[in-house]
Length: 158
Image (cartoon, rainbow, N blue to C red):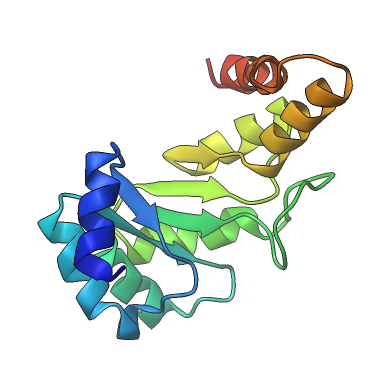
């Protein structure tokens, strides 16, 4: 499809931005130009193992916000957030002036509240998919199941 065509189609579909996890900043020039031309924010990622120099570069290149990983390893729900999350987020704040969103492994209201104390935004994915699938298994509308959890997560932030 190509960068330009995809960016234009994404913008027409109502997207505000994109997360392209397998496209490192060193290889994203063509995509960045197409996204910017279509008015899409190009959101980048940072993990607990990202060195400070790279954090600075990511902070300069990201648009919208920098997506910070709340866990080491793969995506999915966790019992608790990583102990080193506070120091990691403090390090990112020293290196980056973009708003920070924290995601991966956040699945319940308590974790959502903890993440919100460290970041400007909180991202929840796997837990909402699980809530939708659980509702479907019970014969309910999946959106209703995900909506119930989303309401609890939102309530934790108020």
